[in-house]
Amino acid sequence: MDIETAANIGEAASGIAILFTLLFSLRQIKYWNENRRYEIGRDLANHLSDPLIHRGFSVSMMKLHEDITMQEINELTREEKNAMNAMMIGINNIGLLAMYGHLSMDLVEGFYGRYIRIFGPRWRQTVKVFSAATAFAMGLDDNEETMWDGLLWLMDNLKKPEQSQILNRTQ
Image (cartoon, rainbow, N blue to C red; front, side, top):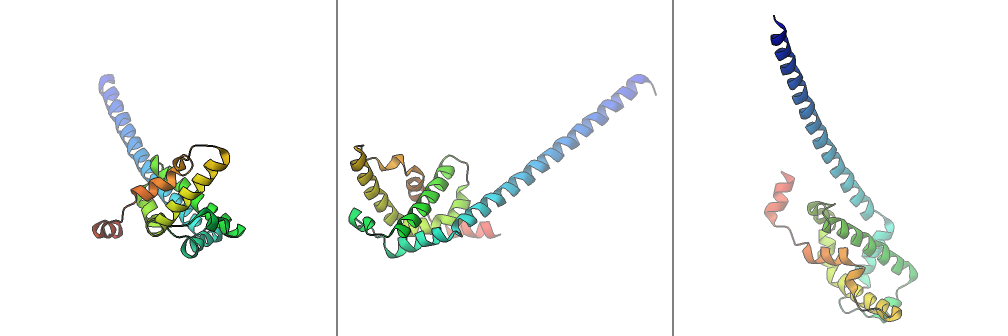
């Protein structure tokens, strides 16, 4: 075998090695993405399993309504207000992540969609009243969207999934 043939064989072998390295890298990236999605889902589940968040949902169910006033919000106990803050700020943060593409909408829908559709009108009114009171107290414009972008965005953008979408996820 002459030197040129050996060089060609060596070049072909190194090309194959590079190809296998690329394939392995793609496999690793796919595995990392799947693992990251699992971790994000676990983080969302952990958020929902917090007792303070449970209390926030309870307050949303029992004390909030679509015509709530500042007086009624003031009548909530400190514990109820803390639970509402924890829940609404947490969901607002999740909404911000989803709005900027850092969190997939199917995960948000799976974990929070039903709650947002059930309690959304109550939360929207609470945000409106809270924002108006804050703006009045601080002498600012009444702009609820500055603090609650994520929550409002989720309420506007999460639609009830069609049955076919649900079946596709389970198959």
